[in-house]
Image (tube, rainbow, N blue to C red):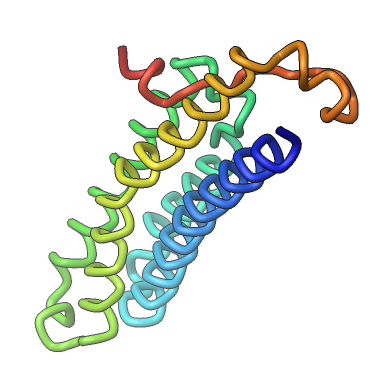
Length: 163
């Protein structure tokens, strides 16, 4: 019983960390892309700084495993993230140097791929969190001794935020 509980909890944390790591890499690549644009097109400095500020704000509004139970928080983050990605990519692709600058092209490709992986990560997280929640429901009485702080809270799911 203890092994199953700990395995589910550890797997859920691992899947969550993979999702956040990937999102952080996407944000870091967006930031690097803005830096490259700043170097190659200094006349866009004000606009690029506004994008930097929005990236900072994006990290501030990102949900965590508790706050994701508020669907509005997830939706706010998703909308802000999608809009920012779309605008930065459109700006990058509109620059004359984009057609021959493979660094810019690779960064744009990575950002698109990472952005598309979001839903896959969420499905993976929901799968393991659902199994964890079912395990808690079936074994709550037996788990009181296993869980250190005696709080056996079920985890919110992303699919709840989309319903």
